[in-house]
Image (cartoon, rainbow, N blue to C red):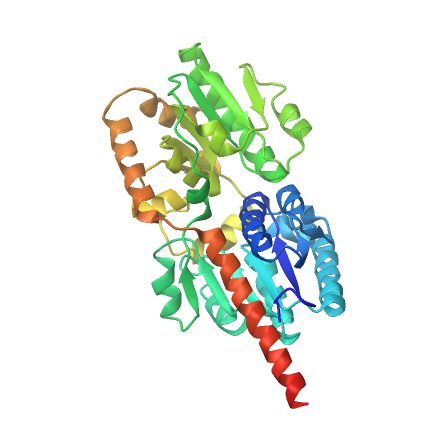
Length: 383
């Protein structure tokens, strides 16, 4: 019996990078099972890949404790919508991507409903909230991790885990000709990040522009963001900043430097061989609650992979235009600072390894679908 027969897959991806990763998995899945029914939460990329969207993912695209509290009503509504659809459609397998606060809670409900759970892009239990390990062990059938150091960590916790590789390595763009004057601004993919980070980033661009009028500033607008929000934030900027709808990877190609919010884009900069300055700011409440229980020195994944502060991190009150500009200046010249960071970025990329993570995750989903169908046939024969 084909695993497509009378089966469906639930996919939940709450923000831009998860949407991109999920879309690649779904494309691989549909190449092998073109008639498989897939539904869930995702953005434009998953929708284009064939996912039936059952609720607006914007409600889940929040960061920080205070922001979650404010959006709790909308989050609960999405959660109930998924539960209702699961009860009606009875999917054989669920693919949950990142978004641990939401997805681990959902995984509990799915397991109770008899749904196999594949979790892609693991919660950072190795950095903070180690209690999530117990939740993963109980609620997740297969954990697909994207960093090599994660596999031994989770395996030691008796979790069925596999290092599949990082999905960004699948879509590396061929290096463009270097543009010595191109500075890429990556203020984040959430509206709250834009509000908290973009004024200081734009201020840093203004300072750098005064020092070198030849510099060209390009801001990559995340696909899920309202372009008007960014334009409003840039109204007072006294420097020309070009907005582009191209992806972060496309925008980074050939750039001299990036100023980026901490997140997936920092790894994209490393893959593109672009030195960067990392900035991040959350609400005071979130910072006060999280910082004491965060076990690592750094928050930027590039620095975590490097095992040291390879690129500068400016957090909270340090997210100021002058400080950002000062850090950026060291990378604009062909000196020791630039050479050192480029060497470090190459080492980080080499340690990520290679592979086809999207294909492997799709294969794992098909394996679970097949096992489910076989078990159903066996039960039917016995009855």
